[in-house]
Length: 207
Image (cartoon, rainbow, N blue to C red):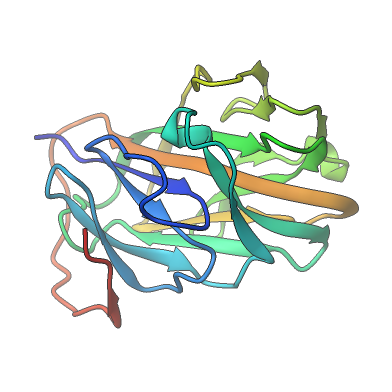
């Protein structure tokens, strides 16, 4: 089975049923937490810096847009970190990235940056001014404006991670409003990997 792992962000679990490739993400899950999805794949990840909070909003929605973890756009930012050399993760390589930024219940301005450790690989900040989005409008991994009321249909993006450290920064621009991370997914595009990490995590997510 190719490595395919996603996080559906919200405030409570169970609230919706995640697909087999995904696990639930709360704003209180600090790095490193071991996440395990329904396919039995695992990875160490979590918030390296803590978001402002989390909300569970629409239990009838696609789990990818049923809730969110959020950070006020005050310039400090919150960083979600994943270790591609941990658990079943195969290491550095070419990944398909899926991101949904937005809120079901509010019109907010979204700003985010994806890093390969310290190298910027996907800029969703609109030059530091963010992307203003109406209710049920989302920023996808290509900075597109996606209308989604119940199902997530945003296109994905191909990203090469030369290191094993993935960092997603939300709310890093001091522009006011709030950035909401609803969904984040990493899918390996090719076979192989360099996972030799057997360091135990500091916390474990049970499913």
